[in-house]
Image (cartoon, rainbow, N blue to C red; front, side, top):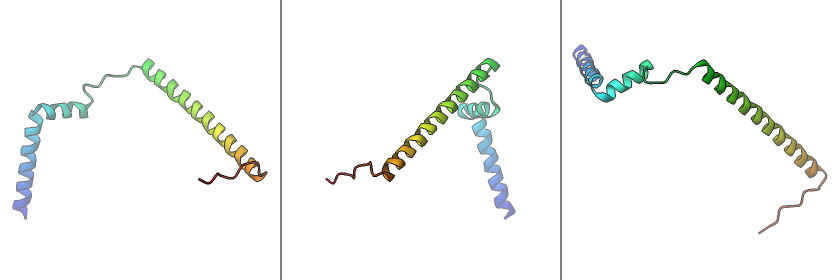
Length: 88
């Protein structure tokens, strides 16, 4: 059992070393470490926060309109103002 674990460990280490010297392995390591990613400055982050806040306001408005439309349809249905669906 210990021999099998040793073999698995050996081949895993050989794989890690082989990948770390390949271009793909180096690119993956850079990505994991955060290199190669442009740093965002405070102004850009502030703009993104503003855009997210604007989208939240727009979503709230759409949700309010949907709620209103649902209430109007429910009232019309209760009053019998909606026509029955047409059969094909």
